[in-house]
Amino acid sequence: MSSIVKVDTIQENTSANGITVDGLNIKDSKLVTSNSVVTANITDANITAAKLASGVLPTNTPAFHAYNPQNGSVANQTEVIVSNNTELLDSSAAYDTSTYKFTPQVAGYYFLYANVRYQSGTTDFDRINLVITKNGTDILSARNNNKDYSTVCVSGIVQANGSSDYFQMKSYQNSGGSISISKDDELVYFGGYKIIT
Image (cartoon, rainbow, N blue to C red; front, side, top):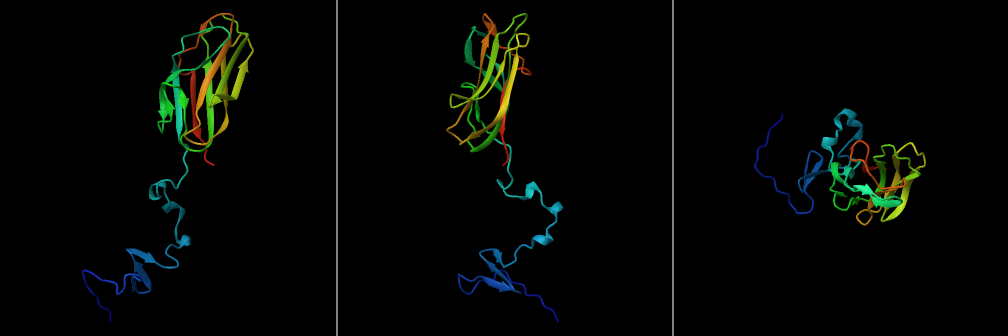
């Protein structure tokens, strides 16, 4: 014969042991058993990102993409920081539109990329360099020595220790005279994201 016991509160006898109901120990509002979760009973379809605690799944952030350089005319044989001041994406407020620095804030490996184009018209270039720097030192670079092309791109994987490292995009042109960097957001940009490792 079964019966039902209805009470408002069950209080444990001592403050350390909790209470046991049909072999399950309840202590501090939690079940305490040797097999609280049987993984074989969990199906893949029941595991979703929404059900996991924050930070359990890795992400590709911080991530950013900036464009719209404000450099104006770049003198011959001159290297400049490319001043992309418009953000398409900045997941963690890690890109500064006034210093043009990406400061990841999270240690790890990052994929960084950059593209530059000069408004060449009929100008023949002796050389265009494009560099991504880490803390002011060149770490990724590309060069275009083809006089008929005014576009250069660079990309690669870098390591950052977090908030003390920063990355910038810079370019050099040698065309024989001053020339402007294009303001076309499809041709001049700087971006990157954390790699899941």
